[in-house]
Amino acid sequence: MYDVKGNLHKVLGQLPEGVRLVAISKYHPEEYIMAAYEEGQRVFGESHEQELRQKVTVLPKDIEWHFIGHLQTNKVKYIAPYINMVEAVDSLKLLREINKQAAKHNRVVDVLLELHIAEEATKYGLTLDACRELLDCGEWREMKHVRICGLMMMASFTDDREQIAREFQTAADFFDEVKARYFADDDAFRERSWGMSDDYPIAIAHGSTMVRIGTMLFGPRIY
Ligand SMILES: *Cc1c(COP(=O)(O)O)cnc(C)c1O
Image 1: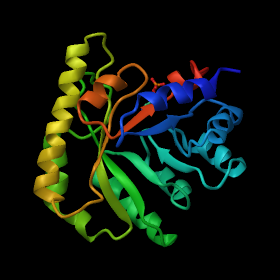
Image 2 (image 1 turned 45 degrees about the vertical axis):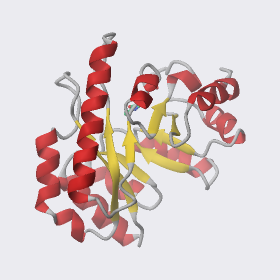
Image 3 (image 1 turned 120 degrees about the vertical axis):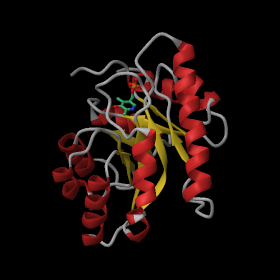
Image 4 (image 1 turned 30 degrees about the vertical axis):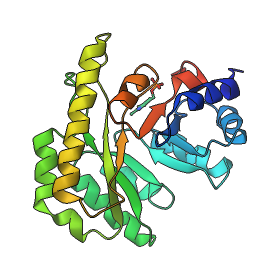
C-alpha cells in the first residue's frame, strides 16, 4: 500500500496554522481512508455521489465529508442527510436545492461558492460577476439551511507558476471584496478553498485556508 501515513504527516507538517487539510479520497479504497483516519485525519473530500454513498455506509461516522465535485441538483437529496460541506456551489438553483433538501433533515449544510477564474473553458464555477449577482440578489439571506462559509476555486492546469499565483491572488482579492460587502459581520464566512497536490504551496502563499489534496496522500488515482 502507498505510504498514506507518511505522506499525511509530510503534508500536515507543511501546513501553517489556520490551513486545514481536506484529504481527497475519490477513487481510492476505504483502507486508504482508514490509514489516514487512524492518524487523526477527519476531513475527506469526494466528488461522486454514488462512490461517496458507499464509503459513508462503511466508514466511521465522525468523518466530516466534503462534496468537492460538480453536483447535479437531482443528486442533492442523496447527500443532504449527512454531507458537511458542499464546496462547489456554482448556481442559485443548486443553492436553493441544498437549502430545500437540508431543511427536510433539519440540518444546516455548509457551502462554498465556486469561482471560475482559470482559463480553461471546461471548468465549472461562477465568474466573479455572476458571483456578485448571486450575492446581490439576496435570496441566500433567507435560506436557513445553508451557511455560506467562503469561496472555492481551482487554478488552471498549467506549468506556469506565475499564472497559477495570479489566479489564486485574484480569488484572494475577490474574497476580501465579498467579505467586506456581504459578510462583514459573519464569522462563518472565512474559508478560501484553493490548492491541490501540484500547487498547494502557492495557494497557501495566496491566502488559502483549506487545501484539497489527493494524489500527494494516496498516490495516483486509477479511474
Ligand atoms: C481531485 C480533486 C482534487 C485533488 O487533486 P490532487 O491533484 O489529486 O491533489 C482537489 N480538488 C478537486 C475539486 C478535485 O476534483
